[in-house]
Amino acid sequence: MIALYARVSTEEQAKSGYSLKDQIRQCMQKAGSNAETMEYVDDGYSGEFLERPALSKLRNDIRDGLIRKVIVYDPDRLSRKLMNQLIVSEEIEKRAELVFVNGDYAKSPEGMLFYQMRGAVAEFEKAKINERMTRGRREKAKQGKVVKDVKVYGYQFNKEAGEMEICESESKVVELIFELFTNPMGRVRGINGIANYLTDKGIPTKRRVGKWHRQVVRQILMNETYTGTFYHNKWNTEGMLANKYKEDDEDKVRMTLRPREEWIGVEVPAIIDTKTFEYAQQLMQESRRRWAGQPKNTYLLSGMVRCGDCGNTMTGRRAKNWGRYVFEYTDFKSQAGTKFQGCGNKIKCEDLDAFVWEQFVNLMSTKGQALSETAASVDNEASLSFEESELQRIDNELERIKTGRKRLLDFMTNNADLVDEDDIRNQLKELKDKEEHLLKVREETAALLVDIQDNEFTEEILNETIEQYLREDTSDLSIERKQDFLRKVFREVRIYASGKVEFIRM
Image (cartoon, rainbow, N blue to C red):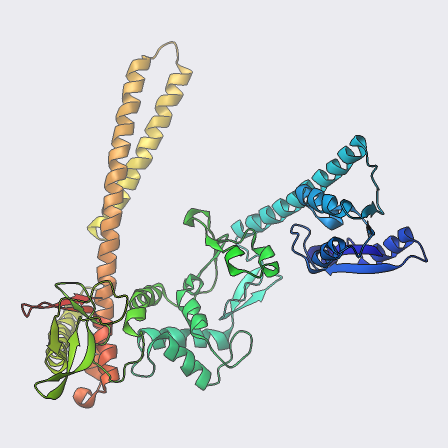
């Protein structure tokens, strides 16, 4: 039996570089009109990898003794990598004859050298094609163009302009997802609740199906593109093309995040403002603990209470106390495999719920009064903070040092016979020391400014919560609505055995 092997990759199909029919036709001519043949065809598979259905079947049939001769149009149809070419060629020739239509080689040192040179050229050509395509995409991204349709929910791709444009119907859903997550108002519970909410409403996904999965909602909430910047070159996917040929998950190549300095930002229309996005990321860090599992009973402070003494989270449970059942928060963990079972701290749900809600109401009332008084007298004219002014001053100083250093070097170069080199070097050293000091001060000031801005953002969220609370009828709030309010203000409530209660703000 004579095997005829042909392969064409997806990119070659697009370019019409190799025709499968033409490869098979020429292999048939090489075999002869009366020859008994079997075709092995890999349609749309890259020559970079050996894991291909038809090639794997061919190798198995050769091992089983079914094939006496293998005819291939060209060596690069076996593989684009020289090492793989040699491996497959040697494997075939142990049990069968290997023949190429396009440039057969002699079984001699010269013939093998020529064969290997052809393989090296084919591998080099493939690498250059990949390198040129990658470089071209990067250059296009640096020019502010979106390279391909990345299918981000909320946007549609304009291929001619190389831009992402807002899809009105989808962008409204994105806004709804962020609103439900940051301000649920009792409508949903967590990411899974949002997915169920969208499914129940019959809202289609990007693929136009009606069922939403929590992972899709989570990806939307974490996608920075919605704030107005899409990043090219963010993920390293090298080697992932072969994953579809690998059955074992452990052997598959994982996508990894490149260092942020390698990302290429492209401006796109914003759907979500930056502060809302950052607030969503804060809540995301807490959501797993807050919404983990669905208890039989609903507890006001579910996922928010922690023991201040041992650090264990405190969960609600029904416990028997002197013959009657009571609800309590406790740090005791009875699950198998628990590293630390807790120190035994517990408190009645009724007592802690009432105390925490009272503190929240007092905060809303006192802060609300202060907020209204501030609004009546505040000067709306924005001004730079001390830290922002200081950063500007330091940047100006650094620019002057850079200019001064350039002048000294130019003067030393143009007046080599007149200047005192030691004096110039001492001046350069002084400038360097001053520059290093300023850079250190700048780093500290920038970090302080970030902290201040984070605090201002937290205060802004608090003020929005106060306004919502004061507008609402609070005489008969559901426990879910109370949870919404508490979780917008407090990240955690810590309980100590001494009776101390500590509130950790968002």
